[in-house]
Length: 207
Image (tube, rainbow, N blue to C red; front, side):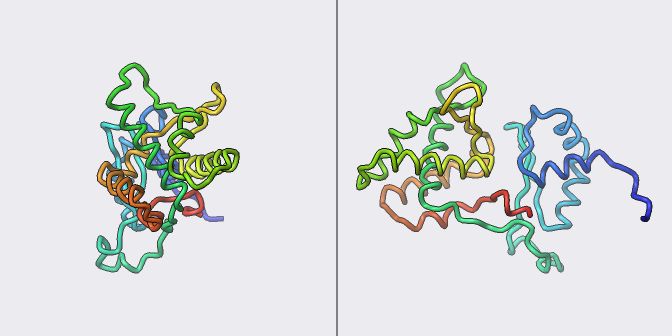
């Protein structure tokens, strides 16, 4: 076997970025990321990915470059991430959670994390399914959508509190205020095509 090249710490940050979002409170990988920002950005551009570092929000993640952003041969690169529609129910949940996060930022000055309960979400959730009278079925669909968003790292179950979930900052980064308003309008108009309107990554996209 040929001798491996000298180890570089930036490889730790590179692998973590390929696994998902990195937050500022994840030391020391956040420090490694910032120390090697230029080298990492250049490396990911070579494979058609854009490194996003939001210091104000304290998170970093990768975005697949769009076709119109690629030229000079880069358009020949295979896609590392595939675009996967969320689906109607998960998109509804995204809108509800994004609204909750916005209220948290505007009104909750005492807590560092945005945590919501399934019961409080269910009150909002069932208003979108007035034709469904089976509460058990509705609750199952809510939990299923929550688990789907957990795989995307948008939410995380709170171990110390049953049926409570933390809304992660990456949801704010991936669903902008403009997208939120557009999706809310489409939901209001009962347009079932909205599952095509959020372009997000899932765990399988990096396989």
